[in-house]
Length: 415
Image 1 (cartoon, helix red, strand yellow):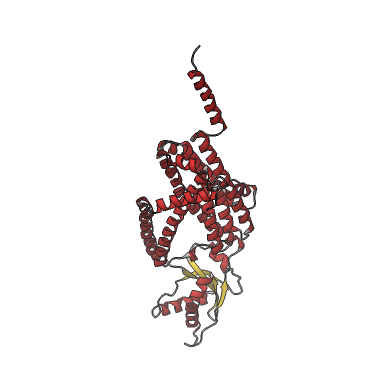
Image 2: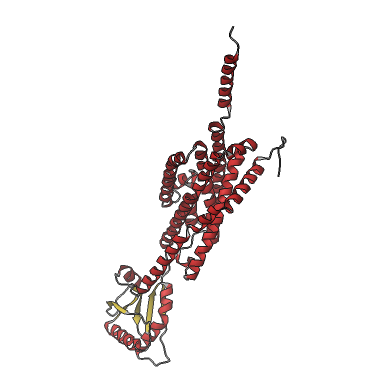
């Protein structure tokens, strides 16, 4: 450990000592075991709800195949489908979309958007040359079935099948942006809930040590900045242990249920970079809110005072979350810039930006700005603690000197 010239530990070395002490003490306590087991019940309920939801999805009406051909071809395709249904399972139901006149133009993509039926794709053309239009996964899944139905309808030989032309619909830029908004919203909500759930541990830890007079002993031995910094990073490390355990539980549950990230739209920066940025922004959001809670805890002496003082902060943090959610819908605007500059809304705004914008350099600036704000808040919190709890500083010195002079005068003999 590095030491100063006076023999005391430096701020970083003292912060490491405090962090190691708090981390080990909390990690091997019985309360931490119950802290880890706490989310098991919601996870169990969520797993049961997911299983029920999967059963409900299985009972949902399956997608149907629309058909837009001439009247004669529609009748032939429908008859062929009924004949094959007795020998093959899983053939899509045919729904007549429109009977086309010879030479009539027809847009299957527009018909799918306007149709109220549960259409998975639309087949056009003729039994001799069918065209299947729809989402990529749907047309590839139905390609073989349409070949069989069209061959039966055209009266071709059992080993001769028409060639199916796939009209694949690719997502537009608007669809991609809309899907990434879902990922951005999910990232913001998860980040906010985890921060508010775990940051409160800092308050209870500080108030407990103030009641036991431990914090005064630490403040007399090492710099107060080191005490605050060590406690912040100790609670952050404890939070990450809990999140790792819960993450493994969730991964096991989703893996057992056959679920993955395939159903969630991919962020603009990609999943690896998005997860790395999520780790950084959760840590910074925790440190920002935790440093503010430390300052509040330094002024409070009872649990009731903690609740009274922390309630406005929690409400303001909720407003910051709502502001970041609103700023997310206006990328590049003054609202988004304000969401990045305001320290307590910055992590939520930047995680949403990671889901919508592939550029990485703004995140380097955002992280640097948030680190600076954490250092500033830690310094201010330590100063408040010294001023109001330890009664040190210029005002306290002047007050003690004034009272000392009054006491000396009172002790002087009269006459």
